[in-house]
Length: 265
Ligand SMILES: [Zn+2]
Image (cartoon, rainbow, N blue to C red):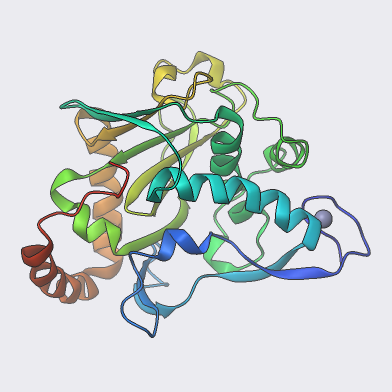
């Protein structure tokens, strides 16, 4: 079968996870690895699911290419590599990161959702961008910061809830500042993946991960908040009953944990 990354037609494909296991580590509950999965498609309501999402996508060599990006991102987000962290009221700034590996990790998340044939990702349609992303990933070329730039944010008041949720990439209902955007909640963070040809004109390019290795994680405020609220209301509409149930269970957990920050933050 054809490998999605090297495109070898006769590849033996591995059962690849669409999202790396480490992004699920906070959402797994207990030994049975259940987690909450949300969708803003009302016909796919929230559910408790088991394990990650798997699919035969890539050959072993290509898996290991992606694995290199993932291993690094895991150490950045969950500890294991040296980073510098600065806090301000607006954002958490993480510096001294390796631009190529973390940027390619970000691209790999949205690319995998785009090339997946699973129904969870049916509204991720990357069009010609899928091929450009594939080339970048396969040749380890991270491109300019604005190319498939991603903006990360979190909700300080609802961090505990977000840590326990997975929202797979989902196309935002309207363009953001004229650009197609996919939103996701992974690893307790809100990810906004911009997929567009003209992001060099994006007015907030400093929000993207920089070539100097500076990653900004915004405390949701102002424009980000509006976007999050819209996403939140879409999910609530699709999953209102289910959210009531998890609110009750999360309230109990939050009391004990006192808003646990990410290990690196
Ligand atoms: Zn391959």
